[in-house]
Image 1 (cartoon, rainbow, N blue to C red):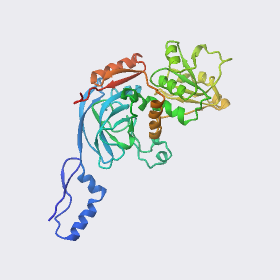
Image 2: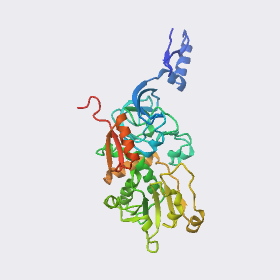
Image 3: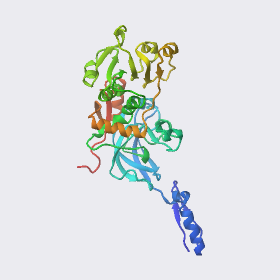
Image 4: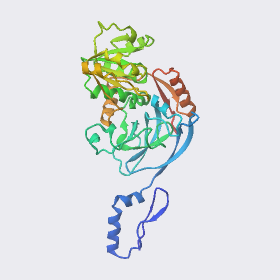
Length: 381
């Protein structure tokens, strides 16, 4: 007699088959064995790891979570994570925070062939996509119709902590020689501005405006400059003028002092600060015919849209969400090749380090992206 046993995700033993007393019975067994359902019963790998959650009181709470490693998933030991303004939206929730992660692959699901143990990878806002819907099939998989994205599901995984479980199709190799601390902010901030500049027709001859010099804005300046665009930085004060010019800006304009009689209009305008979203009519005056405005940092409140000047200039407002998987790979390669690095401030990847970094972000004290660092790893020399 033959009897096969499997484990369910709940850890309970299941009798895969009843007693087998004939060759025909054995054939039935192995036919069933090949089925995905029974494979799920036989394959079970639990991983437990430390994570950092938000809390109703606004403090970071250390916790341990346990997950079953799926066939197409990998376990990653986290070494670095960027801190994003989006994380603040969930600071008072109980979910695991963070979505700009870098780490080392430690375990593979049974079907994973795209990465190997020991690979250094990045992972970000999108945890999983179906790969088969219309958006996935046309290279816009960040809009996958069944995407699993930060803040909407999988509340026990993120990038703040010691480890995470991720779908192998949504991790990205970090180029050799490119520092993990520099790669982390590219997974959201960099991806967000790169998507606008690479997907919606920005050309080297275009005047590209960047409003706001923060986590997104400073990367937009550096990337657009290396793409050959004429970069026009717009700000309320000249406090960051020196930084903007050093990062590659060709012009620096104080918004309330622009002389519209001589100002050359913009083909693209990336809104990397939300303070002028309710004054969109002012922004329309800056735009060229058929220009495009990208609202990248937005308020939860309704925003008035000046349709009349939009129509007269043919201006469009283009929504954008991070970047597709292929665009993220290209961004990492582009930044490595062009020596583009974010300007960062480092904090320890601990509950206290997360809280300190978030407080400085709220106070406007981060230049220009906070990166949480867990080093050295256990067992490292």
